[in-house]
Image (cartoon, rainbow, N blue to C red; front, side, top):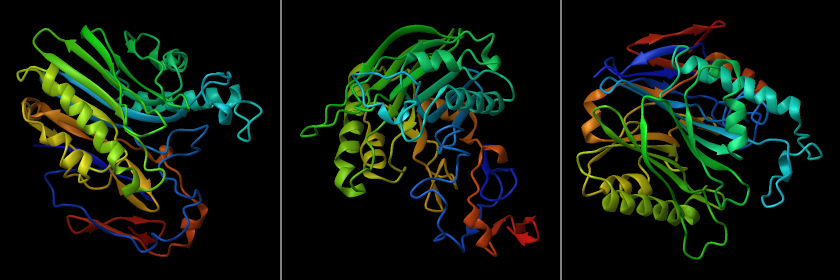
Length: 350
C-alpha cells in the first residue's frame, strides 16, 4: 500500500511514503515555550489565519473520491448572535474581531482548500468549528470555489459557543438521507456538538459519512474522558441500528482523543456489525501539535470494505501554513532522520 504523509516541523516541506523505513525523530527542545501557551505550532495566526489543526484527507481509487476534514478553528462572523456565546468574536471584543480579520481568515482557508488536492475540488468536505451556515457560504464565495457544486448539510448545534459541524458534498453524489445525532451526556450541564450524518449514493456505492467534534479535554483528560466515550457509544449504536453491512462508512472529525484512547480504540472500533479501520493509527507525526508533540486528534476512520481503495491519506501541510515561534530559535539542534538520511536547514541537522 502506497500511502504518503508530510513531515513539517521547523523544516521545509517534504513528503514521505509508508513503504520506506519508519520515521525516527528526536526532540531536544520540546520544553521550550512555543509562543502560544497550550496551542499547536500548526497555524500562522489562529484567530485570523489558518488553523491550529492541519487538514486531513483520504483519496480513494474506487470510487474515485477525495475526502477531507478540517477543523477550521473559530470560523465566526462578526455579527452578534444573542442566543450563543460568541462575544469573543465581535468587533468590541479583546480580539477586535472585524471584517478585515474575518475575510483574511477566509482567504487563508481558501488557500489551503486550493492546495490540498492540487487545485481540484475535494468531493467530500467535513468541517468543524463553523459558527453557522453563513460562514460556510462565505467560504464558498471565495474565488477558488467559483464553479463548485457543493450541497451543505448543517444545522445550528446546541453547543454553547455556537460552533458546529457540517458536511459538504459535490454533484458526484445523491443525498439519500441526513441526520443530526444528538450527544446528550448524562449529568453534563454543557451541551456539545451534534454528529452530522449523510447517506450518499454514487452510481455503484452507498457511502455513510459522519462528521464529529467530540467534547474537549477542558477540565482534565481523565476527568472528561467519559464524555468522549459516551459520544463514541452514541455513534456506535447509531451505526449498529441504521447502517447495512454491505454499505461503506467514512467517519471523520476532531475527536479530542488519540487513536489509542478508550473512546476510539476500545469503544468505537469495537463495532460488531462493521469492521472499522482508523487510518491514522499507524502514522507518525499528526494533525495537531500540543506543547511540542505531534498527535492525531483529527482522524479518518473507514469501513474495512474501503481499505483496499484508500490510495493515500494523512495530514496536509505546507510551510506557509505553519507557525514558527520566536523561542524556537533557541533550539540549537533537532534531529529528524528517515531511511538513515538527515536533512540540513540553516546549517543545522534536522
